[in-house]
Image (cartoon, rainbow, N blue to C red; front, side, top):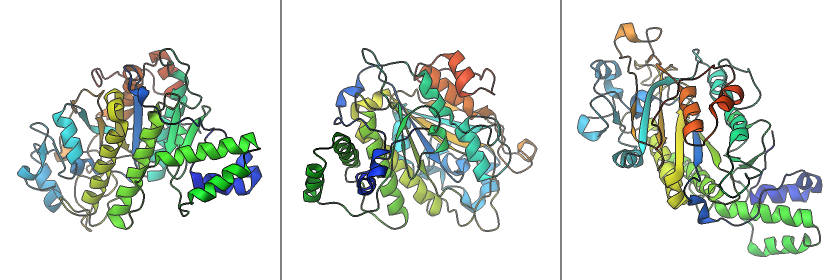
Length: 407
């Protein structure tokens, strides 16, 4: 796996030890270009929610006769507080931006989805979600990194050297593999004065490699904008995801930049005091919703050619536990949004009656999340079906295509 650590402060830390700086692969140093929104310039963003989002709270099946009884006080609010999608599903009140996208027919809810994994380990479930294989630890590369090998070139231009970028503390498994990717993580070091940067630029002026590394790091840090600066609780979650979303948009808008980005957030493991309209989960949903709005704002016109997939490793139990939370489950909810999305609900709903539950406790999955991923790779990013089957999901056989997700 090739990756490029690129924050300015990380860059300067490496530069203090020349060997570290010399080891960093180059990130293209040109400034952001807004020409990337031209027709056909498809962009894809994967947002990983680590910890298992409660899909029954994020997209409650309020039309299911068993839902309110099983959820009790954790049912997310009165019907007039929710954002209705259809006769069966609604959105949590905290997901205001997603509601706007729904009304513009740019949001698709995917419910009762899962990977092939059926146990309840976060670590193993995330490995399956990111590797694209049916069992944990079957591969050391991720499905999205492997997919980079099948990207068709943009019209009139070669493919960028780095087709993808990972934004977070480390490059996640889904983006590790043989294809070179860029990486970015927010720095915790204090802001450097412009005078200090100029002195470093002067110092490195006679060394082409170090000068290029400094320019790369400075350009990447500029993409982060002003999203940093909040701290504490939900404000910190808002700031972190907002900064990553702003930076992701900066990368995706470059003519010579990546076409695929991965963002990740944690804190979705709501075993206790989950809350309903207010509380821990509502705060996390608000941060997610704000981050997605920031991504749309940053992409501008390029949003019209973008698909965002929001996914988690598994769902949560239908019934509430003894600490006013929910435990690890199976069936989950996922979301597609963006200007390229053809909004609708995709759900073969199994129901929540006792006989329909997986192992008597979980929403039963009826849709393989890999079918969603494969359909997007084919229909949105233009990859060949044979390549997807052979290289991206090699142990899945011919995954059923879900028609009409984009258009």
